[in-house]
Length: 377
Image (cartoon, rainbow, N blue to C red):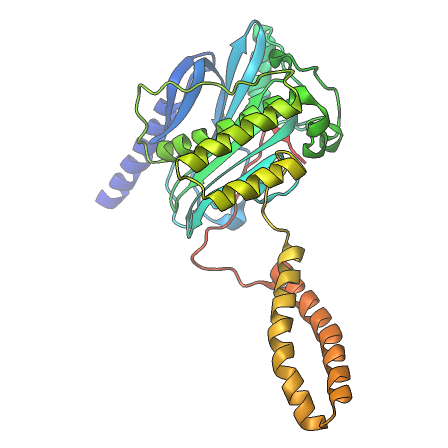
């Protein structure tokens, strides 16, 4: 009986704690949002809570994960939602980790970077664009109703900076959605993600979108360190965080010149070597700022492995072939056949194994994505 009473008391305490931590719709938060023992740094003044609900994500195959929660906050400028902040996090700690967001491994975004990944601990960020979902989540329905009630204008397409920081027990999945209209950029009414002018391949021909996407990409570098500190509840209360700012209308040549100057400062400070500076300046000249992550595709990795393996094997085989045939021509013909046939077999075997049959590592976290208020694919 005592054990039963103790269990009831613990459950009641946890329930009360979760209820007490819920933010009232319409309440305002500045500087730091404190949520379930974590902190989310807030840039740019006052943020209004538009929704604080249970997450729609509920994958029973993952096992016990407790209560997950989604918050949506608005930064309002002149009757328009200038920026939306979408937060997904856990209330109770887990034991098997949360992994990196799938977007951090994509190669078709403006930016995708994994800062570190070691076992269950990891941190990454990305920049892309988001279309509001036709099938809204519970949190987005509540936030949208709040916007309608207050007469606030909402964009259809947003530029998004996403962050994921996680350890074995906790996760912060944070996405800032920036409204292009409030930054002087013509709004879009596209229905498909790939038709947007924010696609990475289209940015080079659009100076305004290019400048803002570049500003947001620069901003993510410093903000990602803050969100990592927030997971550990170590953010200072007096930090003032600015919003991303872009110089609109700047010619692409001016943007590239500024990046070269920034690289020069890094070289002078010893942060990058002269060789790295030269390589990056050359890349700027040939490719601009680039438009996507440097994460290699699975097929590319497999091809490189097949080639490197073939070189090693071929060197050893040519001696064996000559030993058994005693003829240079026969040995050469055998080697050509082995390179052609065996390399092809190795490539497709590796590709299939890595994609469909790879044994999961027990020291790495599973990858868990939540249900978000928009789509980015």
